[in-house]
Length: 144
Image (cartoon, rainbow, N blue to C red; front, side, top):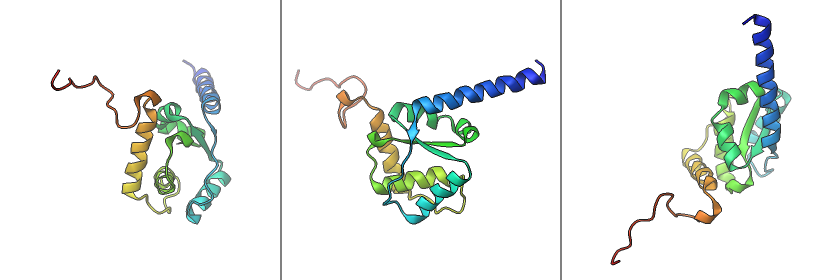
């Protein structure tokens, strides 16, 4: 393959990824109650050309598995409101996701980050499953 074709193919892949980003995500608007250093970090990234986007549980999981692609697109995909993260969990998740881009940012609280991860996993479960119900077959009933 000639260098011209491989460059054109790479551009086509990147264009397709940009379209997928636009189609599967929406703009992220941070909660104004977040700590000032996080709000400042979000503004700094915007000035540097980074976009924060939000996605539903399934699309967030897909984008989370593609960190290199997010980096090439200069986008950080975060969960939308269906994850039902509390403010401390948002704080931890944002710190965790933004710290590689802004190393001076204070680290995430590991406990809140773990709670956020658990809520993100729960958001992937179908609504009919309900909270705390197992994904596999039900255990046999005792006394039956």
